Image (tube, rainbow, N blue to C red):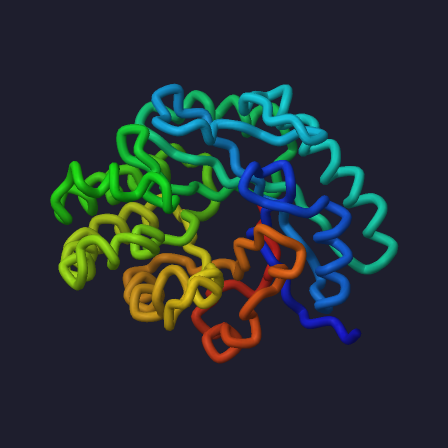
Length: 277
């Protein structure tokens, strides 16, 4: 299959407890799709106050606490795949989606110092240990907060995460839309628009990028995460829109909806499709 010139820079394999499929299966899917490269970004969640038991990494079928030791099994598997697939024309890169929470910087720094990571995504999924990104937990999170309190907390987390200087990209900027529109309705859009200027300024000043995360289409929305309206506003504010990512949680989702994203690739402000630290 002809090469696409594209990398999928946000995929989860079965080291993420909410994903299926081995590293090799994702690599084979990327080759079948015609990608030039694939960046694995397994979840790494370490909040000791998490309300649900998602601070885990799956190793050889066992769910283990997220730690340097359990992450090493993932890293070694990805790095071994890099060697095996290089001769077949696929660049395999080692990344992580780090689940940010208040006070997480030490854990993030420990991880970045321990491994030769090519790419670090900062994922904002929770507030005070309540995960708003999952069907099981979003109501418990949202019912505690007004819409402005929600967006203020999310914005502050994004700003704090970016200011560590340890993340390359904030993942799926408006991921709160996944269940937030269902809960808050249109008030969510007005509330998020009030916080974007401060968020964009922090991202610009720290050279922290945004991704175009195509899973929004897979979840039935008319746009990716973030919406193209937000992408353009961020770009106009000086924020880099750096990479495409499918947020695949199964091999058949690799490169998902990239064809739909093609008309908008001019928004991606880098000539290099690969994350580079």
